[in-house]
Image 1 (cartoon, helix red, strand yellow):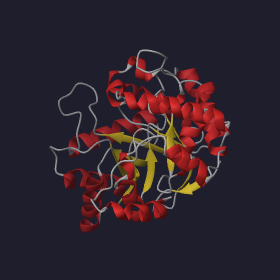
Image 2 (tube, helix red, strand yellow; image 1 turned 90 degrees about the horizontal axis):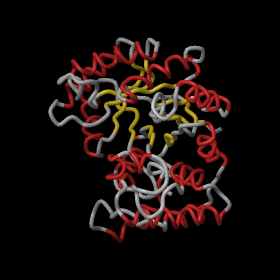
Image 3 (tube, helix red, strand yellow; image 1 turned 45 degrees about the horizontal axis):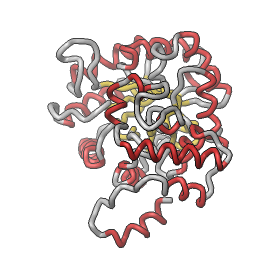
Length: 330
């Protein structure tokens, strides 16, 4: 396992981050513990969570698991998404952020969270209100660093500008979706992250299992989130994505790799990415993702995989400049 600096934080994290969305859901307490131990055995020191995962159960399980290893681990959590049934238990209000972090600290059984994310942009709360609340948490020592998840590039830069203008704790990390069939982050988010030296934790490297070879030509065959979760069915609903996944799976096998390992390795290969967030419901399922750490993609292999899916359009109409940007970013 290799370790990378997380943006400007000075923190070194494993090249893979273990996501805990399955803890308490698809993975019960015992399966979660087995997954956690396997991660430690492979050198992973980076664990991602959120208050909404399993309605708080994921944080509770993770808190029990990290108790004997807290100083060696980097733990994240998030606030802002709808949690519980209260009308004010969502969004980036100061009230919700403070209440959320206190509850997360109790569930995680820790007195600090290494990276605390706004889970999504809140159209109804001025961003400076949210960032001021997060800054206060950093000053109080309850949060070490702050980040934003699911923000666009302009939203992230607005947050960065406000923190600099007010001398608040900086935005150190972002968490965008990124995989072979969801490449929008390549247009502005990942170049922005490189320019600002932000830590980047990407999620959905397998496209909810689409790139793992689980499905046929629709959502109804196979097992996994696409077959049972309407949110993922909508996210990965286009037929071309299934065609691309089939082509990618065949390519991976021909190249001598498991599709899961190669899909994660492809995401990792982007210079802006610090650590893809992997997930699993069992140790057996986890192992294929862990093997991505052993794959060192050549330029030729990376380019061949990239050609399987359409690249997103340039952020400007000056398409003649795209070749230079490609050379700079890869």
